[in-house]
Length: 323
Image 1 (cartoon, rainbow, N blue to C red):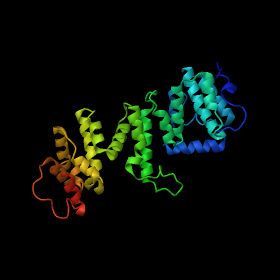
Image 2 (cartoon, one colour):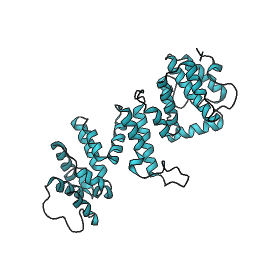
Image 3 (cartoon, rainbow, N blue to C red):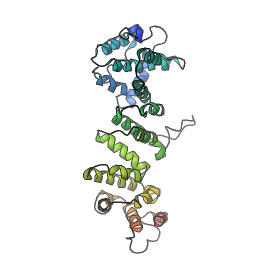
Image 4 (cartoon, rainbow, N blue to C red):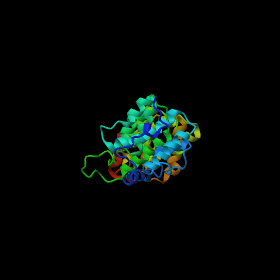
């Protein structure tokens, strides 16, 4: 079996190497775009290898040799150590081109299990903002939901950044410059539906719920019902707020979807209270959504005002369509 404790057995000693000034600069640029933390930083920290950002990338050949020694000296399983070497060799493969398969060769010679390879390759693609390729690995059914909160957080945040970015400049890469909410959040939701992780942090939960609410009002409602009443009410109010935020949403398809939801008695009360006396009353679109709900439930009294509801002009037609 491969003796990975020998540097020359784990890493090539000749040919192009990824940790020169240009390679380090590129990695640091990616790290900065992720708020200062890469996924490999999280892995190394979990192995007890120092502060975030101070271990990877290694500085040149001497830095890589020092990191190799540090990893070998850690009191973790051989597979965990090999996983980090696998990630580092992906840096080599990227530099050397499509014919290079140093990472795969290490995995084959060392017997590194497939699930370790999938995880580290997925995290490597995450660190390079290649999110579609990342999900091809991270959403595999054999994987536990490692780093799930961080993965969801990154995917949703970068979807938001893409939605706020200018439209494509014609280079053909429309995925990162798309203002369509369904497309923006599709990767985050695809990961969530495939991995079905139990999220541990309120930040990840709120970001995921926001993505659900912007994509499917009904799906967000059913998601909120998994939680105890207090948290469930907070999520429900976030759902209503997401529709009220924009006039087009309030009187358009999302407004009709919200007004047509099969609410429980508690949810009906939360809806009314939020629109009538809660924060929702501050929205200029509150009246529109409230009257749409009244039409759907048969509680509306009197004619719809001419010209529309809530100062939205011709959007009254959308309200009538909810009947």
